[in-house]
Image 1: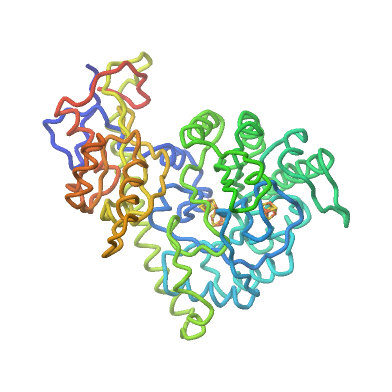
Image 2: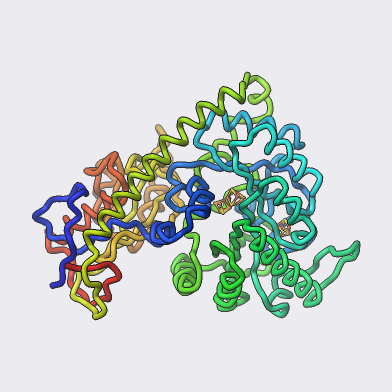
Length: 505
Ligand code: CLF
Ligand code: SF4
């Protein structure tokens, strides 16, 4: 049995011989480790560009852009742009004035909010006056907020200079294909030079504009994330080539999102019965793209007016009437925000330093040959942010899924669930929500939360998932590693032959 160095700084017991020593958490931290200081500075507090940051920092969107210049088969114009939004929800369109007021109100009340994005409800760059008016005012009046935009790319090359002028250094382009034949199955038409253009000809123009825009942004040092919607049977295999090409051209991150095509949303795909991918299919594709590209796995397909940490929506706290009643002194707010941001970044720097120390401890000979190690385990975590196990099982609206193995801890995905513990519910909904939560944990062998009731505890055990409330308020990475060690010590894990990516002693 090949063992790796015991993590002396984590909470788990020394008797439990460790086969999980990297102390690293997934590709994000490895990815962060080899970034230049300049890029690290740009992403360290952006919740979408850094998996680690999304536990601490929040984003908000303002829905100032109603029009769109293309049609996607997964979009119904009644709803938000599905390139960065969950389809089936509608956002109230704001004027740039209202958007600026709302952004300052949110920033003052949620100091962890670091990024303002424009992602709809149509295409931001098809509404250039409204989008750039909002950006221009915010860059002047709230210079401590990062600005971010998401686009289908058709109008992108024309506005790259304007984006650079307003210090917008995070741009998302949705690229679903690089082959017009595939594109014709996704985009029925585009509106280009005052004409509607159809089929392959339309897809060819759109692809050329997207690629040109990507190259122009990279040349200006603007970070580009590429979103792709995975449409089984249409572009799923093709996305591997998309990933390779956009990486070659300098994109920073690739976010492959699942098609959502409920018939009730009234989209072409929904009506035609085009299915979305199963979670395993999505993960397989993300894994096969990850050889060429940094992959984003924590996207929540948020709405065009989302507010808060990824996965939460606090928009109701900031309706226009509530904002009008707020008395905001933004200069004072900026001072408080700076202190809070510095505190969080200091905590993250300490975590980085600790990882570096552990990596140094493991800097012995790396294993070229496969070794005997304990098999990997999937664990679910209930968290409300801060990188901690800090949420009651019954209050979770999603679980974060981690793979723990001899190679460390890897963030794999998140799974949404209906919150089942919502008060004195006596109808059948509570039972079905609990059953849904347990079903969503398929494949996981443990679930870590701050607390859990007797009823779900028994049902989870019956379903083969170990409930664990003993690591409340502990950092996620350390807690899941500790549970892994407990499983090893209890003889629950078989040995397998695997290649170690971390050094072993
Ligand atoms: Fe918004 Fe997009 Fe900027 Fe993030 S969202 S414009 S990059 S600030 Fe993030 Fe939301 Fe996924 Fe978008 S989780 S849908 S990737
Ligand atoms: Fe809809 Fe966005 Fe596609 Fe436009 S770009 S059709 S708003 S999904």
